[in-house]
Image (cartoon, rainbow, N blue to C red):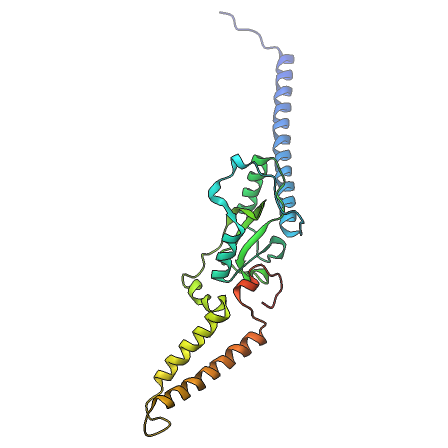
Length: 239
């Protein structure tokens, strides 16, 4: 069997075509990378800039219902754990790349540009960098929000208990009364007189309560503190 002779011109044409295909592939990669970089910058700008948008036109058939939360659910958690639920442009921490990727994925699936982001996080995260449990939401409408991403460390297991006194004035007074009573019980009998009596006990209790209440009031006014229901969605620093 005779081998077909090599046509150099055909080989040149084939090499040229392969080169164009390779160039086309490289150009497509560059285009995708450039588009990806543009999308990340755009999403980053949407996260950092103030937006008047109150809802996004999601395709509800594509949403995970387990990630949809009403404002009252978010408020309850914010009040219980002394967190804030604010626009993302107030957030001073770093938004992780994983969150940006999830936003891009949602935008592609729903064919929209997401705006109006909200973040649920401890108050100090809206003033300085920290790592405690921020959660990123996008508004759906009618006071409903879609959870996009959670990052950072989980909250301390005792945070809800530690923040209980700050939920209301009644809780705070109850705590001060309880501590005053315990301190009064620790005062040795006969410390102020030879004979102990119920009258002496309640005088000491009143004194302890007045001291602790004064400290709490001074601390509250000096640092501009407020109760959880008043600050959960407040953008002001001294709360």
